[in-house]
Image: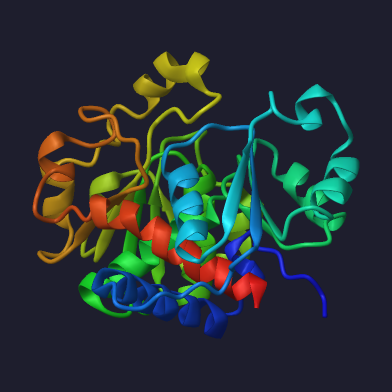
Length: 301
């Protein structure tokens, strides 16, 4: 049987994606009750390759493997030959003969595609410059827990047309919701990613217009990891793209707010929004654990 990878959300079909969300909710409930020991990955090992650092990604994957009876190995560029120039193909061939599944958090999306091509075991995209699909599983799980199905709803994404935005575009296709993206000139999402989703995605300039009647409002930092030298210019460009009380007032009264974290209060979001009653960012962060457990289980079946 062919090895399944999870490099973007579109590696799933809609039925698989919905089943993953349902399974994540079940696993979360099971974990909270705490009366069942469930170890489907006992004696299995997850190799975690980090070229970009993270708090939530590392803790959620390591904890998930521990809950499932397996183990995780953390590998930074200092710990592997990848950081010393070994060809990606060679690293993939070697690592995939020693561990049972591999998670990679890196820069260029092409790098993880090449790694997966030569891997004998499933490869999970834990973030590239182009996509962040694991975060979207957690986001959709969070919406479903609070409001039910996201199908047919309106989601507003305000900010940079980055990896989070690209994954929201893919999610709109997969989970059948309408997406409005509000971003400044020069920071739009990749046109090649938008084009196949043109029936569900609208790119706008005005965040107030974009948030009218929204069921979910989402944002991300203005300068992502690796863009620190662009911070000043980005702050000027995104000055009018803050999620604040005025933006949330345009959305539906029961609209939720999400942010993948870490957040910069006073920049992309105000403190009263992220710490307010419509914010579900802490549930969203926790659900990285449960959504990824469902994903690990699915890929290792």
